[in-house]
Image (cartoon, rainbow over all chains, first blue to last red; front, side, top):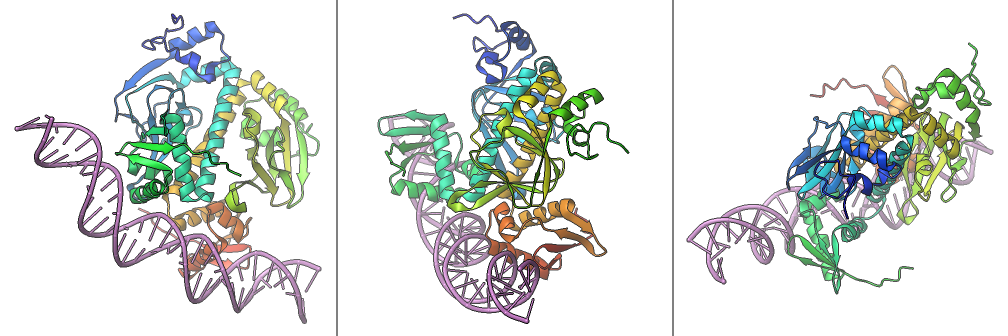
Length: 234
Length: 234
DNA sequence: CGCGCAGTTGATTAGGTTCAAGGGATGTGG
DNA sequence: CCACATCCCTTGAACCTAATCAACTGCGCG
């Protein structure tokens, strides 16, 4: 099937504007205009996409890859705030509010993303308020998610948090196999610890405990087999 | 000075639309229109403004009072997410995204707030995209704040968290006196604990420690005197 | 003035961190 | 294809801090 909207150089039939709910209210003609404003960028695994105090002033929409968004916490530890996958966007904080950027974005895999400059995007919103509503919706969702995370961190036990993370991972990075779900971890132990606010040792121990209790199997350093379980949770 | 925009019944010279950055881009005529869409509500101390699963489907802008936004955490504990003061708004989550509302809002003092219905507000945005940009800015700021809180919870020590909370309080609810700042606490110990994800006993102990170390003085149950300190932080 | 509940304080326990050492996986070079 | 080196991960033991359980205190309300 041919892609007639691919003014975005390099999008190669991926039609990023089409896949993203953000732009679902645009007419076809408007999509073509939109495409002309998009600049595609590619990063290698390990590349820094965003570093503190050097904001990009553009919205980025993740096309392909996994990106971690971190912030330097106290005592030189990094706190991971988000793990972004395909079709998620990032950078609103610099776009809409004048906030000194303390974020860092690192490509965890080879990554392709589409960027739209601040000026272009604001112009777009002024012309198409419906897009504003979409962005508001997305931001609200993100707020909601963050509120949930906050609730987890404050309220849930550490075991529960690890389990939720693994559940998230199994959805995003999992592959169904005969015994359950094989998770290809995007993070190493230390990064998982930084995500959950723990130390790498504790993560190890927790995983070992879950291994012993029969909920999962740790396979090498980057894979975890999560067993299916027909728990009838009351 | 007379208030010529007070179509909002009961706003009594407060001209809520004027005080709120959200509407700063409106012309005077548009403000008058705006006022006609606003419904003012009053609550007594302790009243429930919002209860789980009964969303209000409107934006509320806090005119006068203190409101706590909570969510039920595990084991029946409430997790306090926000403490809202004058001119802050709330309810976007139900406005822009279809999220089942799990939030609870309780008036901690006698409270007056202005509400705008979902339909009216969305119409307003379609007509005045500049407002959308403002809301986006506000949401971005809130996200930013929440990210900071998350970072605190995950990364900072408990002592640091309590200190930041007290600093926040001294800005919002403090009164400058000769020796420092007298904070009129909007929360009791248990609520402070629920805000920080601790137990009330720990909050007591921490305050006692800070008392002994000479950073503050606990006065009765609802007041704390925070001593001035000319710390030259490097 | 006295009662009740929020707040404090104490003793014990649980669980994570820290420091330290050992094991295994991944990937390179022979 | 195997051996080796390195890095990551795991495991162990001691420590530390907050939660828990329990008793007591005193503020603040009637």
